[in-house]
Image (cartoon, rainbow, N blue to C red; front, side, top):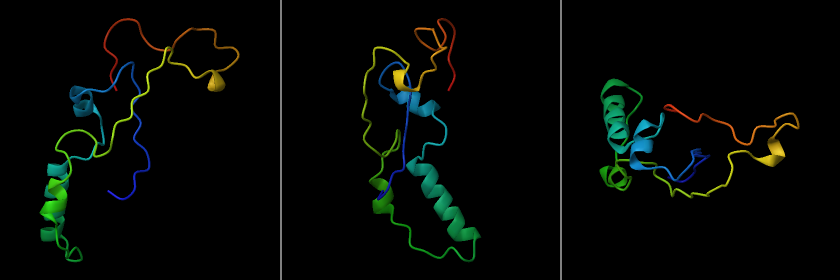
Length: 99
């Protein structure tokens, strides 16, 4: 992968494999392989060589980039918080928090 625009995961702790499975729009090697083979078979203008060696170099689960985790003592950025926002933290204190 030559270029990555951004991959941002926000949460209270470092993301786990279970978190990545729930993350929408993460590219997975098997899905990409199936899509490329389907395109090659079903689209007349899609005539290319599919490198299984390159596909095999990407992980089956999780993002194909390094996850750089930074812990924080609060979930608010003081520089982007309104002067009228007096709550200590944003979020919920009970129940599931879907992505």
